[in-house]
Amino acid sequence: MKTYSKDSEHPIRLTLNGAPRSGYCEPRTLLSDFLRAELGATGTHVGCEHGVCGACTVQIDGVAVRACMTLAMQVEDRQVMTVEGLAASQDEMSDLQQAFRRHHALQCGFCTAGILMSCHDYLRRNPDPTETEVREMLSGHLCRCTGYTNMVNAVLETAALRRQHAG
Amino acid sequence: MKPNKFDYLRAHSAAEALDALAQCGADARIMAGGQSLMAVLNMRLAQPSVLVDISRAADLNYIRVNADHVAVGAATTQGELEWWPALADHLPLLKQVIPFISHFQVRNKGTVCGSVAHADPSAELPLALSLLGGQVVLRTRKKRRVLSAADFFQGMLMTARAADELLEEVRFPLAGAAQRVAFTEFSARHGDFAMASVGALREGGRLRLAVGGVADRPVVKQWDALPRQDWDDALNDFAWSLQAQDDPHASAAFRRHLVRRLGRRILEQVSE
Image 1 (cartoon, one colour):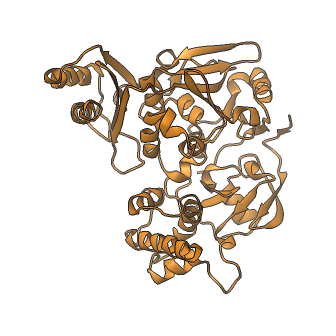
Image 2 (cartoon, one colour):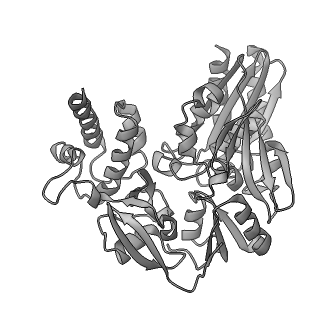
């Protein structure tokens, strides 16, 4: 078993939004800082840095987690997805992002990147959520602008449209 | 809000983690999901010199149904247990409890064993394990021992785990057919630490009640028979026995009030 020394920087390889990436980090480097400072993926925002606010939520192997409560070392050889990976191309938003825009589900947008990553994971697992379930899922995020209701509406509409297209 | 420096070891098996603990002892901290530990590291309330990451130890990632219990390995996340299709059948109490644990995004990474090992008095999983009369499995390179939840929890963030021991597994007893369970808690917002949490288990006339967030560990009380007219007195005696303390979140009196009110509500639920 290899020991990664606290005083050196170590190479990390991962897949970020489908593309192979690599960078260097200390053992104590948080994934949120690694993504932003080392890989330049600044779509992921940093709020509280102790797991409360949800702004830094990303997906690791498809599962929504807090990047500030994850070490960069832990994503070695993993698939990481951030808000930059949601849209199919630069000029086309995903259905979830479009619904957020239609419903005015963001104002300043600071919390939105994390919220989208949670919703994206959750809707895959639960394609037909109740309003209560959506609110429970969103309770892991703090938004100081919207009051959440428009986000709930956007998520429920996205789920309904996806079921409509699938059925 | 960044951790102090530490050496990082990535254990790919329980054996590797145990070797690291044998070498480093009290200087090392095990991290599984890290959803309590990372916050503590970020705030520098803990500054271990070595961090042993067991999240990739495949032999510690399991949910096994055994003859009389469900065994959950040290690398298994709360989210994996939450989304386990057999959860409601085998562990109906946990089906009710898990949604109260922090939030979806934290449960996705936080582990079942990690929460038990952390032993926060207001955490839901230690309460559930205590109420069900479950066990924890502690392992070193040389030996393995099985402790009851009652023997394992020893106070606020204090357990019977020795520095070279890994909490390898927790065992939740399987629900009996005649068993009724209920759980609820009170917190400022959903997902916050509970000011008081109460779980109940009824099997025939036998009644068990567990309270979290009030004493320095989950406390369980059992009655072989408790007629409805005695509930209020029994709950009041139980509430006073917990030695509740005032803190910035709630007064001792409010916590006793919660034990009486929440206790009454869930006794109703398991007695309908």
